[in-house]
Length: 396
Image 1 (cartoon, rainbow, N blue to C red):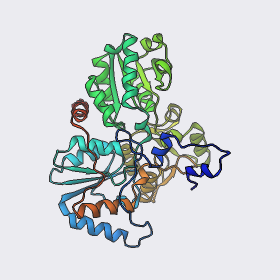
Image 2 (image 1 turned 30 degrees about the vertical axis):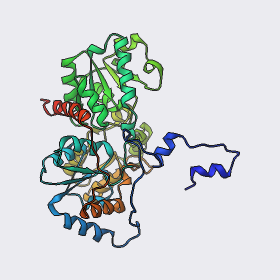
Image 3 (image 1 turned 180 degrees about the horizontal axis):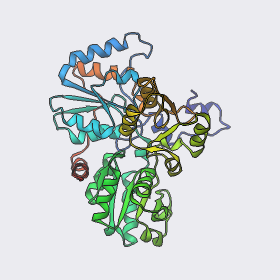
Image 4 (image 1 turned 45 degrees about the horizontal axis):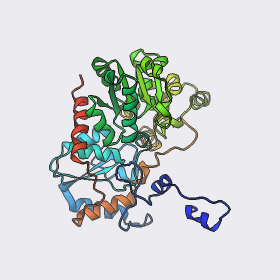
């Protein structure tokens, strides 16, 4: 891959790397960002034929001191070493249920490791094998942007009517903001329950950071209309909205999305129906509204897995979610035709940063008594974020 600094050798381009570019390349650090930071230490070579054995040996040496969590979107080479697999919230709860484990190795992305740190005890250390494993969606809402949004709502005279609801796929800072302002967290499984609760507390909801989950839940499951929803763009003055639009809205959706699920289009759905007669289209609610409206089934990662497990032999399915998961469930059910919804290969690029060399490096470092890449949420942020999470746990 051409290095950004090669622009120096081609002065006619006059290209200078931006701070964002340096973050994405892993050359700068921003501890309050989901974006990648430089990984210290020497990683083993991906071509090392002993990587699997080295991971096994290090994990065996650590014994009960380590608990390895594997998100559904992880590579198979990593998942094989997970003690449990699941979505982000399930894994964070699993970590909290293992107080005897000194080390929690979270094979996922940064916000997931933060949630695990919030829910586990102070004696437990949460490790992310590669600090560059972030989440583009979580990056789309910073603490500063959300604070500015709240000022806009205050100036419009509606802040007291607004209850924030933040998706689990958000940074600890955003979870803390939510807790501080009387809101709750939600997952893709319980978004409707969270919104029902929020509308009992106030007249409007600020939904962060995924616009599609918020819109799909409000319109598909709660009977609200698209006109009840407005889109707040943090890169525009006043979010690109008038005071009248804010006052009329019931759902104020943050302009954020998942880079994986946002790729699926209505054309993808129409194309697969033409190619595979009788196919069932099953998508995640992070997909665009028109994709969800055209699908046969819509649900969380866990819902997708359970639906395919219960499907009859010979049935045909096109799945709109991350490719690692689709491949894994397809291999687990060879008697069913399971295909990826889009023709274009689409992994979660940041989730895929957790590979076998990083896992081996993290486990061997722990086995040597040298915790690396520890994720720690400061106490004030943790207290408000935990408050928001506890409100979610108390949902009926």
